[in-house]
Image 1 (spheres, rainbow, N blue to C red):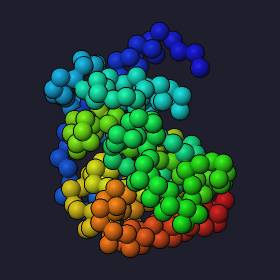
Image 2: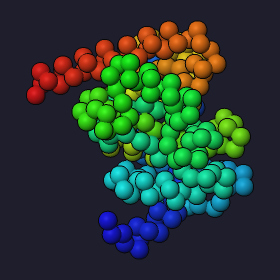
Image 3: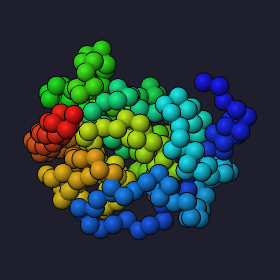
Image 4: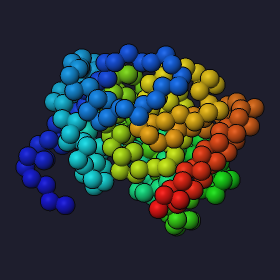
Length: 264
């Protein structure tokens, strides 16, 4: 793809404004009305992250128009917050670009930062085992059918130092990237894994234990909440509940597929 000087300048200045709307306390928040422009907080003033590079805020419409190559380049060159100074590389995402399933995690860890791929190491192995148990894979060569493929992405594209929890400013500046990924994939089902993924997508501070077990929606897409694999490695007794969540997501996806087939 050939980029104009204006497009290069816009990508170089890439930065997203923070979401200033208070986080909802309702566990059944329906985020169907959220848009790239709203989530980026067009009218909101952003206080820069401490020690972050100075970066002008790109218009949300610029992110909304990006295709896969442009979005990947924008993520790789992003300097909108201070995480760009400590990362080895960005972690864009992996999987089939039109997968029926989308898995959204929290933030990259040390191994993800080293390899540039989400969910690797022990937590990645557990996730792969969980997906394989219901006939899914992140690798296109395993099952070429998009219905059996997943696209995996994180709410943050850079690793927080020391694997600390993401800051609200960091999540806000990265949010538009994730939203555009979801729009490009157009998944039939979203599996939100971990507290920060859930908070970002559902605008809820309710504990995962209160949100799991039922189907939510994100911009009209069914969304199922479950525990992050790293949490399951530390709390083995919760694996049974995570399996229930996978079964709920599978049933929901299959029901959606039947609905689409009947409407075709």
